[in-house]
Image (cartoon, rainbow, N blue to C red; front, side):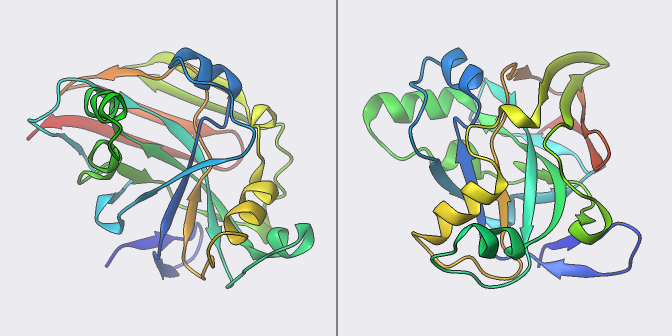
Length: 220
C-alpha cells in the first residue's frame, strides 16, 4: 500500500485514486502542439506508480523518450461529490509537489492511433511524491513559484497563478464527474519546459514554501 506522508508528523495516509489534470498551463499545452482546453483534461495514474521523494525512477526499456513534469498535488481529506466552491476548498486537506513522469513517445504514438495513453503515464515509478503540508499549516496563495531542475539546470519555472484551473476549480469539476474520496490525490498539471531525461540524470522539483521532491533516473 502507498501512503502520503504529512510533514512534521508520523501520520501516513493511504492513497486512493490519483486523478491528474493535463494541459492546465497554456504555455505547456502550446509547447506540445495542443489546443488550450476550455475545461480540465483528466486522466488517471495507478497507485502502483507512486514512489517517495529520494527513491529512483526506473526508465522503462520499451521507451526512448522519458519526460519530466513537475506539479502541485492536492490531498483530498473528505468525500465530496457535486461540490460547490466552498465544499471543494474544504475537501482539500494538504498540498505537496509531485513528478508526473511521462513516456512521451508512447503517448504521442497512442494519440496518433486514437488509443488511450495509459501506459505512458501509468508505468511503475512514474509518480514521485514529496511530503505534504497540511492546509492548516500553510495558506496557498498561488503566488508561489514551481520549479524543476535537471542536474542543477533549471528547466521549468512558473507561478502557480498561471494554472488555467486552480485547485478549487479542479476539485469542483472532478467532483461533478466522480466522487473524490478521502486519500485521493490530484495532480494539477505542469507548466512549460518539459523535456527528456536519461539514466543518470538527477531531478529536483520545488514549490516555494511548500515542499521539494528529488529523484534520479536509472535504467531498468
